[in-house]
Length: 256
Image (cartoon, rainbow, N blue to C red):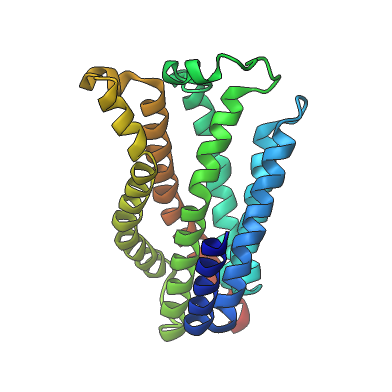
């Protein structure tokens, strides 16, 4: 426990020294996000609760915390929030269908022995739970890309106020392309780093390459990575278009 307190204190000091007040808000936002996720997980255990609706509510709360609480309520955060929620809704419907088709919900055969003493009839929809897990894994990266593009496009617009909507949209896409490669690789290594033990487990079980690729646990993890990457790719044109539309419309309106 003392180690956790020391690490938290070091993180807080560094975030305050580097980020100032915004860094302090970012630190407390970690606990707020954790609270949102914890409450969502608890409510999901209720048999009549719909995990998809709960996920949308949780994503809305997380987006508000990461955008409005940390960066304040302004045009950048508003457009980033709209872009994020649009992407989440599109991605959620896609993931629900894909999860059902791939049949990655539930537990893999490698986990059956550990769960044999428990009842699996807990009254929850594992298809929707699987989709909720994927969405909640990707929400942080999606929000990060949205605010990065929105902030950069705002700076471009401030320095070139007569820029056309098409050129502003193109600039947003160009910024997004630079972010896309690094962000998708970040997702890849984050997921694989957390599941390094799983790969070692496969080695101990003497799985062949085909058995690893076709195992439910591995397939679910790969679908997590690919779905998060799709979300990051989708948020780029959506944020660029919404920002270009809002900024140019506001300029034209003020010019009248």
